[in-house]
Length: 144
Image (cartoon, rainbow, N blue to C red):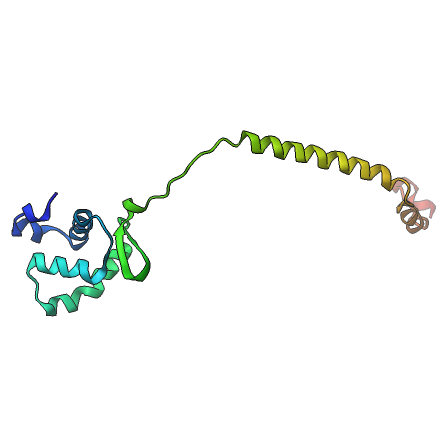
């Protein structure tokens, strides 16, 4: 839709965010908040006092409307112009490398187990701690 082809009455019925959308769509490039709102004010034949009174509300409108995205240095653009592009690559070679690495690590871990058998086990310390431990059976409780 071309804004210049619309009548003044049609433009007056449009919301500020719809006007901003159409302005950015027609321009095809990013714009600053003040420039977008000045264009809207020109279209609606609003004076400078109205511009100053409503510019803050217009900024809030842009910030909360999901169709717009704020860029660096106060510029705004349409979010649809800044969608993320996701590229899917074939990861089969990487998966094979990962599987090979896992297999190598598993083999190395198993080798370490055999090396650890030569070390003195910690089981002896556990046996010493339990030497005074007595198990009481409910049936034999009266014998103590």
